[in-house]
Amino acid sequence: MRLIASVFLLCLTLLGPSAHAETVNDLYQVREPVTSQQPEERNQALVRALDTLVLRLSGDPKAAQSPALDAVRKDPQQLISQYGYEGQTLVVDFDPITAERTLRQAGIPLWSANRPAILAWWLNRSGEGSNSLVGDGQETAAPLRQAAQNRGLPLRLPLADLNEQLLATPEQLTSAAPGALTQASERYGADALLAVDASETDGKWQAQWRLWLGDSREQGTAEGADSTAVADAVMSAVSQRLAPRFVVARGAGQSLELEVQGANLERYAELSRLLEPFGARLLKVEGDRLEFQVTATPEQLRAQLALAGLQESPPEAPAAPAPSADSQAAPAPQVVPRNNLLRFHW
Image: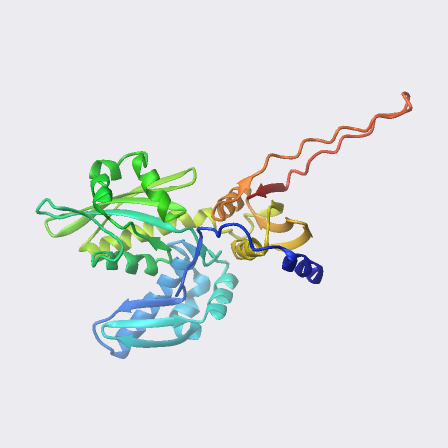
């Protein structure tokens, strides 16, 4: 089956745009601040790095405290391929295979490296009353990028030109609907829109944030001692809200069949990456139509496929029974569509 599928796929032409979803780089590298290179502080930093990795991969703030990980938390180095210092930062590289296997054996569901690209409209308001939209390439973007990397989120920032500066007002960013931000965000090709109004008061930072992904709406508040801390608090909260849409908990999914119309080689490769968390198995290739078997909930599968720009097709209508020449014969039974089949197309 795999050989036949490969032959068909190699015959598909490379057409169609790529998905917005991005593969997170350095997902298994964690950077922890330290004040010295003393063994005791190093060991504490390694445990913190493990906790950060577990949260990054699961989106569950309680996962790192699982009793099944007690032995690993006592000796995180069994999951680490290497570590070293860059100034006042301990850089820890975890081995992906060992880390994933350990967490899965501990019963912790994982989020794949393919995640929704987030466009952040982030407004900083200082205590002196000045407002500044954080733009790509600005110095103020560094804490946001660092926080997004720390929480395993693909982040994009607007150019923050004059028109965008005028658009990103506190009233707009705290509005219940994205409004004009939606049109302004189109050129950046992101999956999710994050609006943040961050302000400094008495030396501390507070932020109101709103997140839109498809039909999903999330919001919250965060605070921190400085701009770096509040950025990390916002990204951590966003990660925890997004993860349940894509992470399949053990026993929570069901066996589903997925039909995708309009595939080509590029799209097949993207689909394979997106469906990886659901244990996808390719069943059939017929022209530009692919059939997979996956384990997920319908809602999670819909959320994941939306990252590739797929649209759900209506269920197949029941096939009408064929007319019988014999008027006395019992009518042929109708063919009822399968309730475990989801159909999508580009």
